[in-house]
Amino acid sequence: MKHEEPERLDASIDPTLDRLARSSPTPPWHDAWSRLGPASTHEERLKACRAIRDSGCLPDDAGWFLVGWAAESLAEEEDARRDDPLQTLNDFEGVRASELAFAALLDRLGEGDMASLFRTDPAGHERRREAGRSYFLGPDEEDEEDEEAADPGWLDDLLRTVAARVVASTPAGSLAYRYRPDLFVQQLHVCPPAGQGWAVDVGGLRESFGRIDGCGWYAAPADEGAIPYLWIEGEFDGREVFLRVLPRAEAGQEYETWRAGK
Image 1 (tube, helix red, strand yellow):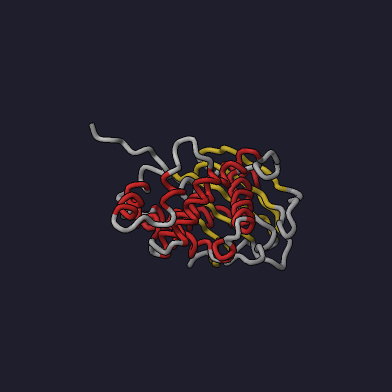
Image 2 (cartoon, helix red, strand yellow):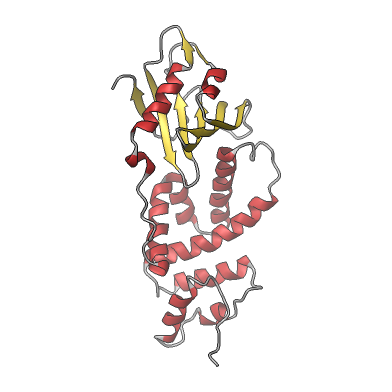
């Protein structure tokens, strides 16, 4: 009967590490890895992952992914213990709080380079993570066409709808916006033009959505530098959308400009 190895880190990661361990003299990380099992803690898995990364037996991006993946499991534990209604008000605040907590955790773990890249260039961090993930799992077989590429007009329609519901002395002919096509929801962050007073016809904006899952006013954020915003979560043009309307652009964020009639 063939002996079945226990799952140590993950069924998709273990085979690669097992081959590495068998193809060379016993590596320095072998004991820490071989002691892992279903009952191992996230701290024990992280320790083994760091030992594997630090041994230099993996490409840099694969080691980056391995440590980041283990740290993400620790961060999920912290998320489960978080009990702050302001940080769980909606999907955006939940994701934002999780990202801040993850970067802080990386700092505490001594992974300053990863924490810095995650804070300053999240897309760069994600590219390294994906390159490392592909080393273990291979390329993503679900090469689905991006929704925005398939229908580039939907985002323009939503921005046009927001502009039409901005009440000001003159029509809003432009909007600053930041679009983030996350996995489960299309995030759109919008700022009407500065330099004039304006309001939002919230009722009319809600009516433009096919379905409303949530709507609110984030009036007094607790975090330093955060600003208030109106938010609507629901379905627009068949897509799951999270919309924020802000009084001004957020510092450190890059915005594009939408113009009516372009």
